Amino acid sequence: MMPRISISVLLLAVMAASPSALSAAEIREYSIPEFVAAKAQWSRWTGETIRVEGRYRSFSPNAMQFQKCDLFFYLPRDINRPLGRSRTLEVIGQLKEDRNGLSFRVDSLRLLPEDNELFHLRRRTLPEEDPNPWYELGKQTLQRGRFYEDALLAKLGEETLADGLQIEKGRRKNVDAKFLQSLASKAAQLGLDDDVRLPYVHEALRQQWQEQKTADEPDYISLRKKLSSDLPGAAMLLTSLTGKRFDDYRRSPIETFNKSTSHARKQLSRLFYLEVARAEYQHKLKPSGSNGDTLAAEYARIAPDDIATSEYLRQQALLFRTENIGDATRSEVYALAAEYRKKNEPEMAQTALRTWLDRKRQRLNNAGPADYLQTASDYAEWLGDRPEAEQIALAGLKRYPQDRALQAQLSRWGYADDDGEWKPASEIAARPRSDMEAAVQAGRIVTGMAPEQVISSLGAPRTMTRIAFRDKTMLTWNYPEAKLAIRFEQRHHQGDFEVSSIDALPPSR
Image 1 (cartoon, rainbow, N blue to C red):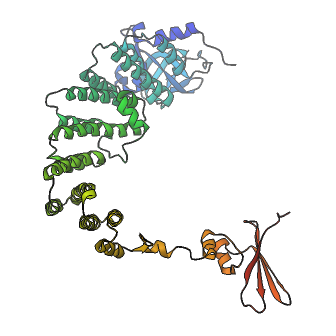
Image 2: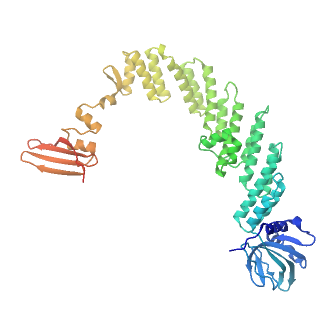
Image 3: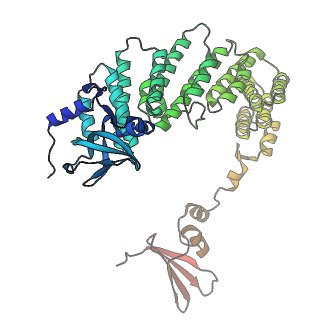
């Protein structure tokens, strides 16, 4: 069993690892990452007493080497290999230079706790309201983790730095956008990735957005540009604007963003962008809606994934035109649709025509047969909506059953008179003409059916048996899946088989 290191030893190690515990004037102190980074200065330090600590990679009776350091540290004869699970050592000695180059002569050596163990001990002593010690420990731990390619240690360093940022934020009485941006900048300077930095950027932008909402003249364009540049994903089009995550964001944007994955944050950044863009164009829309079509075209270029808002703007323009044409004539409405087509807006043309026709249809209760016919024809020709046109013509014929023009139009559309009720001719023709045909259409088997009719209903049989008698021939088809045995009979004076009985097939054993 490996020897246990007591807490008192660990505390001494913590004190030894703290720069304030030693006089820098007496002994130079370096971690191996710092020592290696200062390699260009080694020749100037020869003869000075230096303390170095780090993880060792090799240890022999007369020399050792630290990880990530090519320099040999030569040991005195009376120093033994350290015992314990830790691979962290502290050595004190001097750099020497001779014809063989630089080396380090060790005077003393001691075993230190492992980095993770030492980290947790130091972290427990950090103050809860001062972020600076958290930053210091976090930077040291992150540096060591990256130097030794120790992902776990680096992660601990990143988490400590992130905790320091939260402590600094918690101490602040007035957490405004400027302060949040400073925290985001500090996160980048500390080497933290976007998972830590972006929540501060996002919260700062949300605060700016709240300020813009109450401004007399909100600067939507500047805010949209800042969103596009500062939040990855703000310019990434979405395939849908619905879903639980989006609903959560609309209710609690900061909380939802902070707890989301990197990919989800990109989607939420786009949702934020669309929120600002939507407000911008609603602000631009005149109360009358007269500029709605122009705004809709602009909005579709910057937010093609927000179809609903573009449609809303178009609808406002349509309502404006509809309200202004009032009881326009048929030719006036058609001319308006032609103007939309010239502007390469066929959807607006169709919407205008449909709105006018829908209003006209609502007034057909007091109209004559010619109005029914004209309205039905317009639905079919202008909108290509045959189903709606047919319903209007049928309603007109129901009210004016003897009108030949409506009858002729319905005939051209494939309808026929069925005992006073006009129905699609195909429906009348498809009506079963016998019980046998009804059974075939329903997939039922009845006596008298021919073999091909049985096949059309049940398919080919699994097995069949044929028995010939003096005056007839019997044929049995078995359908295990349907649990049926279909028996056919053919009289010798007749030429065709017919179903003579339908029996239940006994269960197989």
